[in-house]
Figure (cartoon, rainbow, N blue to C red):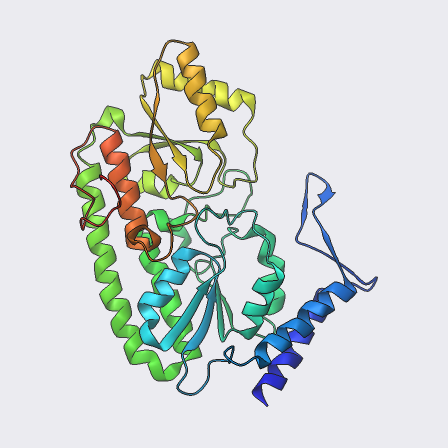
Length: 359
């Protein structure tokens, strides 16, 4: 019976995306071009396929003693849900290693997964810009929570381009990310009240780990000499990092990777590298290194050598099953890599000796 009811919900969700003319336009427009369309028939097929998946043996819905089915957009949110939910949750992240959330659009399999889930967690603050309309509509029939939207705005950085918007990269400051954990915990308790005691206990333990991570970050980054505290990256994802650790952050692209880096911006940053004798820049695992390499080549043309200080995790974590595939490992990797490249002494393989390669 529950499968039938959820199938009805799913078909109602599907119907939301079908316009009166019979065409659903995916996401939004970028530079005046419609990025894609799904016909009414194709979208209905998605809904029917989802119902079939629900009825397939081995793909049951969480109920009773079964784990709560949770779908999270980013790996950082998924990691938080696993840490807080423990054995009471079964968590799936939509966006894996190297995936850029700014331009990500839900696939058919994503829609099926979210329609089956007991709880959907997304970031908010404009991070999943191409999926916002989908989540608003999905939230009319399912439990859908934007875990960063309710953060205290006094601690957030205003978006330089869009009035009223904030920089969404709050995970770069563990003290702010700890606030997101509270919203994840609350969402899990709302979905599974019987697990409240376990969720509270797990959240407290995880918060302690994050406090230790922040203390480690402060210690090693404070050992970087003040004149070298300049972080040059592919896009402006490290603003909260800069505020927390007193670093100047220079991104080639803006807060969103959907923005373009003009030749003037690259030339401007080349001049900064040369004039201030900055010797290291950083690529990101979820962004092309093309613009960073253009900086290096531009500086070389002026007789100044710049090297890649390492690859940082900006909008996505490392591979699942690795230390870098956790939030703790992601931030540990970033701060250890940055500090080492900028001349500080860092522990071998990071805070817990778990980083891959030399830290």
